[in-house]
Image (cartoon, rainbow, N blue to C red; front, side, top):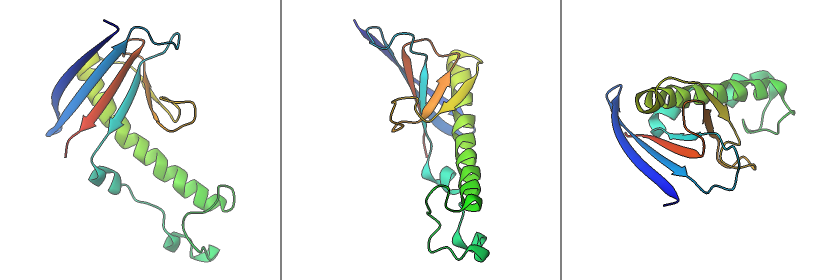
Amino acid sequence: MYSNSTYHTLAIAGREVTVHTRTDYIDNRSRKKGRVFTSVPREMLDAVPRPSVDDFPHLDLPDIHTRRGEYPEVDKAWDRHNRALVKVWREWTTAALEQVFGEGKVHFSRKAGCACGCSPGFIASQVPWHTDVWVSVKE
């Protein structure tokens, strides 16, 4: 047997949370720390305020989506928005991991799952090495 999978169903803050863990014993990446990938319902992410063109009437923006560095004020607004999203994911990640693995630290990484940045997630101290965890918060 080269890998081991487990599933946990938890109740956190009145919602059903599924935690799927997979330990890969023949992973080619040496010293791979535990990775956690979290998905939450869209409504939780939509509750985080997004920057809009109306927030910057003095800049005469054609669209709120601008190139990084072109408008530093807009960049800062998007940075605040992204930090708020990570905070939502972190709260659910921490709550689920505490019930399954105990207390520990998690830190966000844009390149947790892949070096290109396509799969952001958390690196968790309490998750065993070579173990990937998927936390899914149900609607």
